Image 1: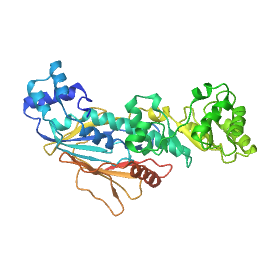
Image 2: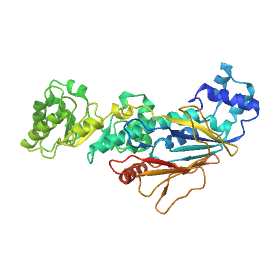
Image 3: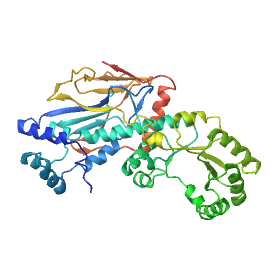
Image 4: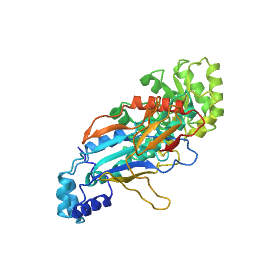
Length: 410
């Protein structure tokens, strides 16, 4: 097992050390994760990452290697090192379910426990939910632009290896149909897709040989990449080499809309009426929306999804809101917080979230937004990705196409 205990910031451990010295590390506290506002132009956010938080929590243990390294750095007291050796999170975690919508001020994740055990999770939790929720939101915009046409997530080469796996998971929650990343397929059961790149075509003396070799191994339902040299000539060669039952062609360059129109006309004229057209090439929600009228069957999107569509973080913060049952809050200009443990639910109209620090006043038809994920240190509910995809779809249908998700505090 690879420990996640050092996937954190230096100051988490120095806070712990000082709290131990002051005798306050065992005080019961509540931390909340929220964002102060959505990125400009966004009507909603998509929460994702709690499943990966639970995976990371299982591995958040300070073993001999971690303790030896920390001791060698000489920035912690022996008392702190000894405390970390016995660390096990024994508190509670409540979260919005993955695939749920949120807005500024939504308490998407709440950690309750002692100060010592809860403060150590700040960086780990934020690094996961900021990344995954940004990707899920970007994917939801791409999926919405694509409508009923599937989108393949193919951004692995634009980010780090583990980030690519996490991005594929979040993009699947966000509504994309499959991923090119095999580890994401193995680890999370996400459908995988892909055939060949330009390097395969360039390996052969001509395109016909490349297409015949590919079809001989992968079958006539394969997708042939046709823009290596001349797209029109390659389509003719592809149909001649494989036959009109060719599964699909992929176009990765040029004016994709115009190329798709020409390709559809040519395919139909050759009797390949069932051959699908796949387009790729730095697509995002805007470029996909512009292709809505083109005869495209499948999209591939990468950079815009794994990099959060130009906004790589959601701005989630992890703030202390309660100490020993007493509400605490920051008053800093521009960074003030609202103290107290929150409850949250969505009004029956689907467009307003209600957040309060007192007893919940839920009406008929309202929906509770907070679920227990960890109770007394034991995981009691792990997310299901297909359920998360369906939840997002239903929440978007509730919200409708134009209105923003609002927050009401009571």
